[in-house]
Amino acid sequence: MNEKDLKTWRRLYEAADLLKVQKPWELIDDYDFVTVELRGRKESAYCRVLGDLERAYMINVFESSDALFDAIYEMEHDDIPWHQKSRYINCLSVVYSDREVLIPEDRKMIDLLGLKYRGRKAWPLFRTFEKGYVGMRLNVEEAARLAEVLEQLAPAIADMRAEDLELDIDGEETILRRFNKKTKSWETLVAPLNDEPKHIESFSVTDEIMMSQLKRVRKLQKVVEIDVMHHILSIDNAALRKRRLARFAMACEVDKPAEPYITSPLEPEDDEISTILNILIGYINEIGRPREIIVRDDIIEIAIQEICSELGIKTSVSESLPAIDAVFGAITGLDEIDED
Image (cartoon, rainbow, N blue to C red; front, side, top):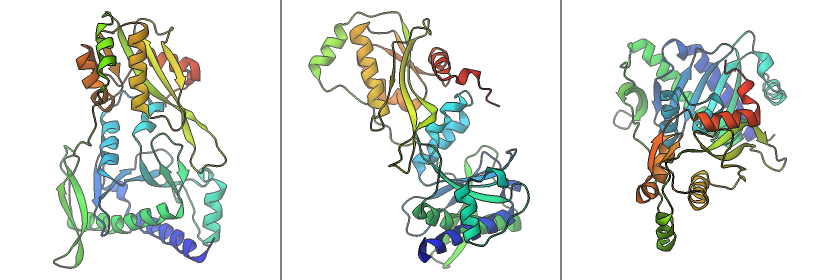
């Protein structure tokens, strides 16, 4: 490792150590965010502190408003199966855990930097999480970005304590850390949380002949669940740093969970919304127009709403899809794993 990269990693560990001294989990609730506005970045970083974990403290840093939207969506929907929550995670993380949790690469870096840690929830490790991928150690570019955020998060927590800053209980406020151009100094204050919904495109079928054909297909009284499931096991490729979670496109009639219409694995390059649309169109052509389509979340519903509206198909959202979840659990064995 070259000296420049080593310096970046040292900076990250030092920032994490200073943050731990501030004990942010004593001040920040799991459902609140600290916003850090960094000079030179187009988007703010949103920091969530998870302090009520059995073997670790964790700080997740969401680097865009879209990532924040997904994080809040997952937080507010308790019925999403635990093994599908990876669909909503896109962040950099620092985790203070026990020594046994560290992988050899973590320990090697700590030794290389000459650092010493003792006790439970004392050993820092750093991970990057991206939707559809297994959590991985940071690369040096991610390490630099995370260090920059943590360097401002620590004084933000110190200011909270010193100035007795508190957030409202409805989650609409944030602790904001920003550089004041007028005073030319950093400041910490309470501000509204920028939780605007992200732009989601509703797809349409531009092929008028195809749409005309779909409208002529007979209407059924069937209710169909459609989703792309993320398996907790990954597809390993030695040539890639990132390991993608295995994904399966599934459609089931609610009254026939043992007879799924399709359970097809997706290739890494396959787009999930396009796959769901293809399944929907395939089902209509082969079986008929269902009365209703149930999907996992609002994002998917918005994407298919225009097509379904033209075809007279009702759409609805349910975090729990009993038919699909049962098939997926039986295929993967996840129905035998206790979420706790």
